[in-house]
Amino acid sequence: MAIFNNQSLPTSSAKYLQLAEMIRQAIRNGQLLANDKLPSVKSIGQDMQINRHTVMKAFAELIAEGWIESKQRVGYKVVANLPIENSRAVGVSPTPQPLFDFNLVREGMSLSERRSEKFEYNFSGGQPDLSLFPFDEFRRHMANVLARPQVSQMSYGDSAGLPELIEQVKIYLRKSRAITNREVVITNGSQEALYIIAQLLLQPGDQVATENISYPPAISTFKNAGASIVGIKQDKLGLVPEDLADKITGGKIRLIYLTPLHQYPTTVTLPVSRRMKIYQLAYQYKIPIIEDDYDHEFHYRCQPLAPMASEDPQQLIIYMSTFSKVMFPGARVGILAISQSLAKAVIQYRLLICHKSNVLMQAALAKWMASGDFSRHLRRMTRNNLVRRDHAASILQNTSCFEFTLPDGGMALWVKLIPPNITASHLAEKAKDMNIYIQHETQYQLSPDNNQDRYLRIGYAGMNENKFAMGIEALVKIIQALHEETK
Ligand SMILES: Cc1ncc(COP(=O)(O)O)c(C=O)c1O
Image (cartoon, helix red, strand yellow):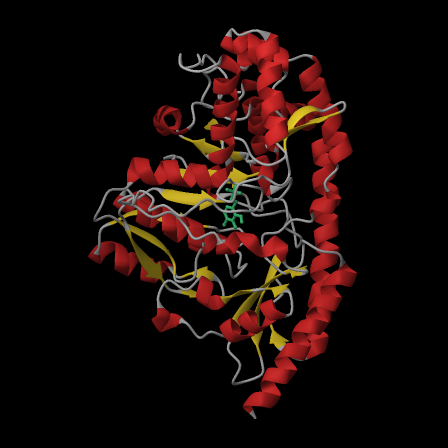
């Protein structure tokens, strides 16, 4: 314990009294809290190079004064009710002191979006059902990793990711997404990949183009790098290439951010013809495209469209994906599949942030992928999410409160509220009071001018059918009550 480490006692008064005063002082200033266990007599004696009897005498003094007590099988501990008022007993705040005021020159992102899991009904669109993750199966791969640790990987180096995982990811991208001939870098989730790309490619004054309704964490990351955002029109088929063309010619667009397979948050799949037009524009004006393929596996109508990165002779597409939806967000495993030169820059930039990432998780994931268990899990999850999508669609249709187009894939429905006079943001706010978390259009609109405040994003993958139906029933009751109020 730091209180006793390398400390020598002051020279005046008896040693045991000095030690007792040191401990009292540690309790007064909060280094030791109520119920904290004290180090053993022997270890204090050794650390401070004093006789054990001196320590025992100091403890006896403190026991007599009511600061500490001796408990069988526990040893000595600070008492639960301390004898002074200004000591920091559990739950008692210290006397307030004016704290240092930091001059922050940059802002991060608000956390409120991330707290959806606290609600009884969590309709967050990106939420996988964690109860379906095969933790037992994964534990076996993790146990295997721990049983035969690769000691050479436990140190620094390899900021690109664990070579075995990179190998597995390359195989997976080649077989399931037709992505070949690219360098793969493993990141701490795709958010870290977005951050690094933004830092490497953007500077103040640059513009980033994305749909008028887009993914807020990406937007915040681009802004943090000094860029401003240019909203591009979108319709039922997704981003409108003609509007992108207009805005490219008149502006300083240096990067395009897209989620082509299931546009975030509207779920629309960008058709091939539009992808080609966008690619041509990007090539003509030398603008890289981030293709964020965050939920590729969950496509139900047909095989998912191959990513734009699979037909990218110039390698101008910065392809990213994540294991957050097929595993769980806490795994923090993201993928970048990019050109060799960009990969080199990313790997070097990663050294600035975190040296390398979680080797144990990456090794277990590599084993899980190599074993075939991963593919089985993906098939199970995709089947399951399809059933949940269809169930969600029929529940929502029966309410007569929502209008929507059935998406080809993803984990959420983008629905329009039918009852007039109720805004989506107001409904979402009221829903919170009833323990329901639901996302709404205002959270995603880049500009208030476009905001109709009528759309909700209703995630269906995160809870079972029964719970989904109960949550929607509760939501409909709120809609009915609001409708009555506004009549
Ligand atoms: C559009 C989009 N990109 C990426 C992610 C995943 O981010 P991460 O890999 O950092 O968990 C999400 C998850 O919600 C998402 O919706």
